[in-house]
Length: 73
Image (tube, rainbow, N blue to C red; front, side, top):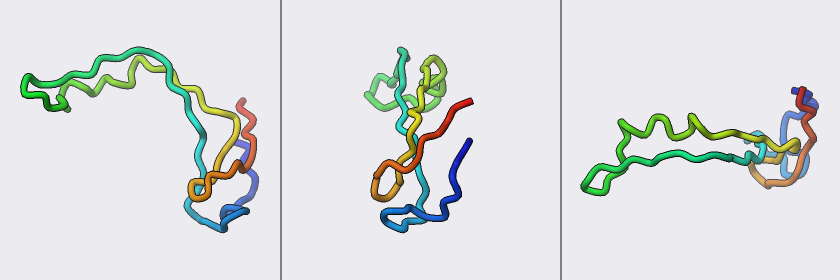
C-alpha cells in the first residue's frame, strides 16, 4: 500500500481509520434450518465463491470523506 502518512482524518481529526468501498460479485447459497433459523454450521462457505473488488479510493471511517487514492500493484 502507498498510504500517505496520516495519523488522523484530515477533515474531522478522527483516529478511527479508513476503509475501501468493496464490490462483491458472485452467487452463493444461504442455508436455514427447517424452523427458519440461520444455519451457522452450514454457512461457512458464504463468501468462498464471491469475487471482491476494492475501489482505488479510501474513505474516512468517521466522516466518510474521500481521503487518498491507493495505487494497487
